[in-house]
Length: 186
Ligand SMILES: CC(C)(COP(=O)(O)OP(=O)(O)OC[C@H]1O[C@@H](n2cnc3c(N)ncnc32)[C@H](O)[C@@H]1OP(=O)(O)O)[C@@H](O)C(=O)NCCC(=O)NCCS
Image (cartoon, rainbow, N blue to C red; front, side, top):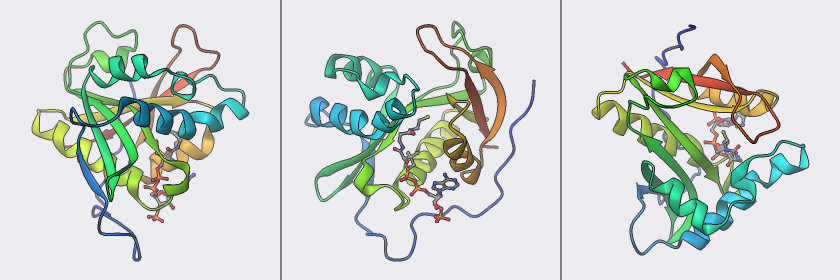
């Protein structure tokens, strides 16, 4: 099985001119599941246009609630407005259909999204770094995710964040092959 690259570059927190006010925090009870769902629907809507069926593009609030409960849901907030999200899961998913995720040293994340109007400001990278740091504190040696193999610009984005392709997975009820991307944390 291929092993991921390690990222030795210094962490980037924001580009010059980006608001200092981007707050990354754990989702809390007062956060609106509907607002989070709309954000996910908007961000993943671009995949529908390219013919890739991503559940987050059309999921309902009940599904968002279920998915956020699978791990720790982080949100990015600017002035009280939700602008990004990600759900990360501790290492150890022994029953996952994805063999790579069964490795007890591999943490995973899903539901990564940044509001389309707020993309390109370092929010996605900041969410990732926070999840990686939390996963490392929980003993993870790698952080992994998967995405549509034909989303080349997204795969490039993950590469720019220190991730490399390590495997492939095909989930039930999807119409595309996914690549598994991983990054060494230690
Ligand atoms: C993917 C996504 C989360 C990225 O979030 P973002 O906040 O827009 O990304 P960032 O601003 O943090 O990008 C940081 C860096 O990546 C670079 N980058 C952005 N797109 C890139 C691409 N296609 N290829 C290479 N680098 C890219 C940016 O230039 C920036 O680098 P810099 O700081 O050196 O200029 C966001 O675009 C999104 O929500 N997309 C739709 C949903 C989605 O695809 N989720 C993931 C599904 S697996």
